[in-house]
Length: 313
Image 1: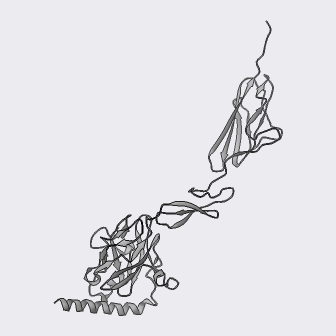
Image 2 (image 1 turned 120 degrees about the horizontal axis):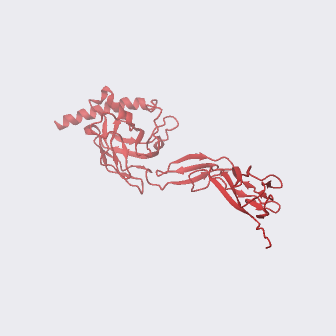
Image 3 (image 1 turned 120 degrees about the vertical axis):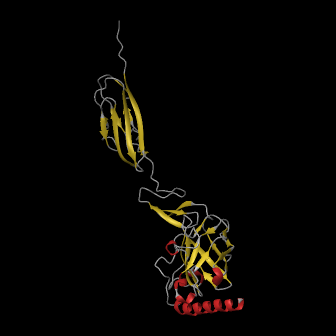
């Protein structure tokens, strides 16, 4: 009985092998999304029944003519296709995994384990002898240090045990960090996959370790007898006299200066010769309010006091 069953399985696999081998050279991966998105799977899985399952076109250098591969997204979900010369395309795409024998159907990875299912798409053909094409991933371990897989998946009696020790993935093996590529802010994520997250336009610039474009801070521009910061001269004024306000800021989008006496001026710099106040009748507080290039507020304040009046008795 066992020999008859083995003969039937061998005959089925031989028929599949001949059929698929004839197609493989000209048959592209089944969808445009043949390459998964995220950290790629490298290497192969091995089954004594059906041989190697190829996780990426890089293994055999076929990417120029037949690009395919499986990857792990940042959320741990697998996608894309692997190739077997004996059972054809093996899918990790969620759309192909509905109706799996046991939930959860989605092929996914945590830091240390694989779960869910793969589906051999050729199992929908009449040559498969009734095999449903499901490969159960339960029992596959993943090292977050080396990236290597270990353990076995199960593909029913047709495929048998599938050894994952010849495969690896960088998923969850890296410490995320930000770096610069010219004016681009680039994230190297937990799977060592690099993605451009922002492009900086001057005066913004990229700074290693920072997740967004950086803008230069507001900067005072000194002038003749002035510091660039908000100044009011004189700071001690006779009652009824006027004072001059001075300021000049760079790396700001806009500025206003307002006094508690109703004075108000706009501009990133004071007018030539300073801004003239209304007659000073008492203490006046002046506040410079600017909008920095990154949208943050920037303020400075100064006070003008009135000279005391001395009267003889």
